[in-house]
Length: 245
Image 1 (cartoon, one colour):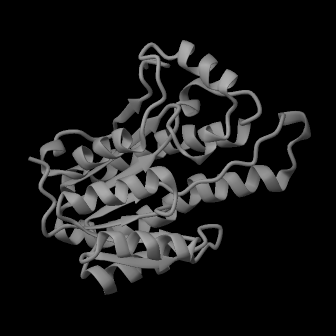
Image 2 (cartoon, one colour):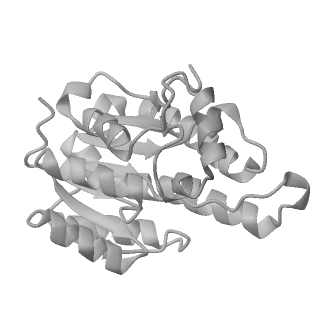
Image 3 (cartoon, one colour):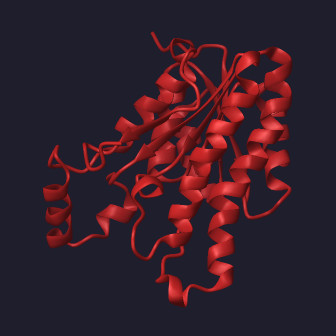
C-alpha cells in the first residue's frame, strides 16, 4: 500500500519542518524527489540524508519565472513530474489596519500565486501522461481565520478554491488535486511559543497535543498514491480536532 516506486515528486519549501517530513515520506514510499527551497545548505543536508533518488533545486517562488523553471528542473533531473506538493509559504503577520500593501502582496504571491504557476506548468506533462497528483499544503486558518493573519488566511482560503476548480478541470485526465490543511504542528514556529502559550493551545485541541510534521506527511503520501485515485477537490484537515470542518 502507498507504493510510489517509479513516481517523481517535487516538494517546495523542503527545507522546512513540514516540507522536509513530506520529502522524507515520499522518498520512503519509493518516489524520486526534487527538494526545492531557498536554503541551499538545508536542502543539501536533507539530500545527503536521503541518498539516492533525491535531488536539489534552489528557487525563490516570489520570482514569477520560478514555477516554470522548477518544473523544467524536475523534468531534467527526475525524467518527468508526477507529484507536485505546493508546500512553500511565508507569513508577514500584522493587524489589517496597519498591514502594508507589500506585506499583503508578498504572502499572496508566494503562498497562492506561486502554487498556481507550478500547477499550471506541471499539468502539461500530467495531461499527456493522464496521471498526476497536485497537493497543496493549506492551513486551518484558511477555514477559521486568525487575527493578525488576514493575508495568510486569504492565501490559504484561496488555495482551497483553486484546488476545487483545478480538480474539476482535470479529473477526466486521471489527475487529482487536493489540499492538506494542518493545524498547530511542531515546527520551528511553534517551538518559539512560551510554555504558557503551548498549554493554552493544547487545551483548545481535543487531542490535547500539537501535531507532528510526520502526521501531515502521511496524509500527503496517501493523496499522492494510487489508493487515493477517487479523491479529488478535497481538503484533508489535520488538526487534532481543533476545527472539525
